[in-house]
Amino acid sequence: MPSHNFMRPRGRLVEITINSAALRDNQLGDPHERTAAVYLPAGYDEGEGAGYPMFVALAAFGGSGFKLLNWQSFGESLPQRIDRLISEGEMGPVVLVMPDGFTRLGGNQWIDSPVLGRWEAHVLEELIPEVEAQFDVKRGPAHRAVFGHSSGGYAALIHAMKHGEHWGAVASHSGDVGFELVYGRELPGALASLAGCNNDPQVFLDKLWAADKIGGRQFNTLMLLAMAATYAPEPDAPYGIRLPVDPDTCERDAKRWARWLAHDPLELAALPSAHESMQQLRGLYLDCGSRDEYFIHFGCRALARKLVDAQINHVYQEFDGGHSGVSHRLDVSLPFLYRALNGCGAA
Image 1: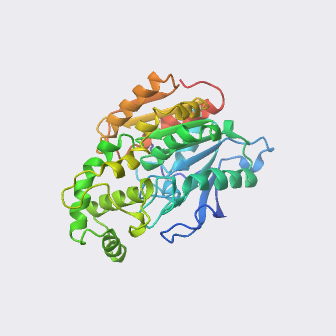
Image 2: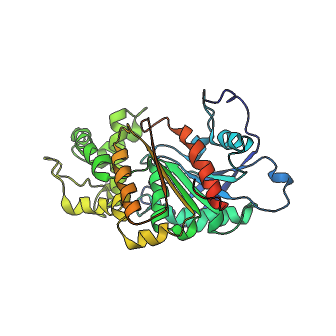
Image 3: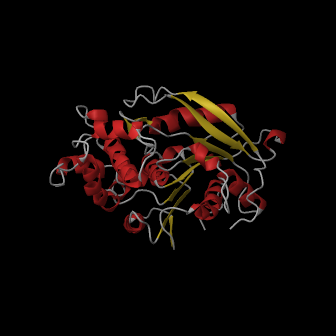
């Protein structure tokens, strides 16, 4: 645990704003003009244009890139952590990019959706080129890494399995894997919340958006509604939201649920296209707490087995912990990513 968390980051923080075509027509009516925080390491302004690796941090559901800048008691902001790892010789300096992905539904999975917006396209086609144009970063996939926790970890896995040609290294912390356990067990609770709103997601959302605060069960229901709008949006439903269950019996709708599972990394890992994508990476890192409250560790274990069977080079680690309060694991993944980009192996 760091004892000097009162220290200011040594580098410089700037912001960039992107007028996003990929997010312009989202059905939530969320702003398509998005700001990303960019942390420039100490010495950046005295550099000679040699270029830095680009690290992109994708925030968890309910968060934003700007949340990663927060001061923490007995902890560190993400720039402070990177500063410390650099000073300890665990990694070299990088340009850190922290985009804002918050939405009216509480966040997003950083994948393309007609409801929430085309977030994959935003990152790949707009954010990366803008950072390369404005900052002294090394150009090309071999010098880029993407990482995240929870929904951000899920997104990192999706980039590994679908867009490996755009990245050199990927790290996923407790990413959503194994939808049957992660989401399936949440569906009855979501129906219970919607029952007081005539089983109408629009009524639930209107009440939530008008409220002064959001409760724990409300947050879990909001998450499920956001997942429905992300994985299986339906044009005739409010904001595309229709849960994959019968509202009276909670019986699973096989066709709708299959659309969700098509986005599960555990299912995607069986596809030859995913193998080809991941094989282009210089490094792939996954970890999860052995007491994850969403039972993601079971999905991660199964995913790691599939990666072994497919002969995909990767590192999977489990640690004693739950789903939250796991930022200390970045002490492992960030140096891993840096070494991978610099051809120093995955050990």
